[in-house]
Length: 376
Ligand SMILES: NC(=O)C1=CN([C@@H]2O[C@H](COP(=O)(O)OP(=O)(O)OC[C@H]3O[C@@H](n4cnc5c(N)ncnc54)[C@H](OP(=O)(O)O)[C@@H]3O)[C@@H](O)[C@H]2O)C=CC1
Ligand SMILES: N[C@@H](CC=O)C(=O)O
Image (cartoon, rainbow, N blue to C red):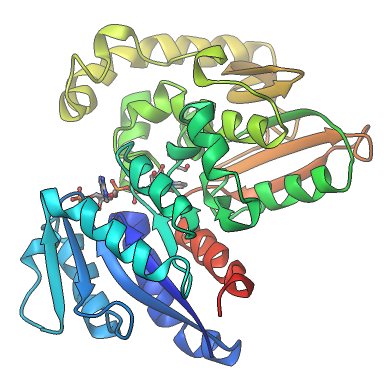
């Protein structure tokens, strides 16, 4: 049986679903001759690991307990007394993670899986790469950081998987990589890459207020932990940057033109998430309602679109025909159109659910399984 040791950073909606998928796929994976050995789970403050990461793993009972604890909003450190594991806190967290990566990285292989939404994991990921580990990301921040960070993470392309960073479970990156490696030059990518904004725009068409629709999107698990990451266009810009960098474009976030749906005075430094959701966003209802009506009078709908062409990436609201593929998009679907030499007149189109904890975690799991040939 091929064993894939996994260290999971981040145990929120996506991380918990990942652990649940790992447990529920045990017999499927056994038939495939693979076993995922979870040797560590971290939240923002603690790491839970077996006493001996070389020989032991966190068993399925403990993983279910971890999911239960985290779903109530408690810290990992509140884990009950099932025994057979240790909990490491705060200042020791990164040292211990590095130790684990040293022990397992080059000897048996280790997949360090980032399901956090944090910038702080970048440092650990950099070290993990140096120590021969594989990296799997749902977190977009490490691959949209500086070019220096990106170059290091992407140094061994077979050792990094981040399909879920764009389109969750959709095979956007896999498809793009196949086109790139066949030497087919990609000229243009156009897409609706945000489930939150896709959902918001299609619900606005039905006359619902922005404030109500954003609350619903948050409850459905579509938004980032801070929905302003979605509404400000930053989440789409990150996805655009990831795709552009895959195409070999040496660009940074600052060079992307981003249209925000909220004004600067409602930004994260000036308003808490709760205040924004309960008091700030209602002030935006009227303006967007007027834009929707104006577009409708021309037979159009509003869509938040990402366009990658030449060395430019632009993200913002566009009026598109109701009858176009973008205009027909509903609910939680993303759509990505890739134009290349082979897909010149008719683009390659990838469409389907582009977010949600279940789908995103499924994408992460498929990435982990895809690493199996790199492990003993
Ligand atoms: N939901 C979706 O549809 C999609 C999500 N993604 C990405 O998946 C990631 C996870 O999203 P989601 O699960 O919704 O986020 P959550 O906010 O629900 O969970 C984030 C988790 O990360 C933990 N965390 C924070 N900082 C650190 C750190 N430094 N080290 C380790 N763990 C840390 C948090 O700990 P604590 O519990 O202590 O706060 C929490 O457990 C995000 O980057 C998101 O962009 C990508 C595609 C789709
Ligand atoms: N918040 C994101 C989730 C996936 O990346 C979105 O709305 O698309």
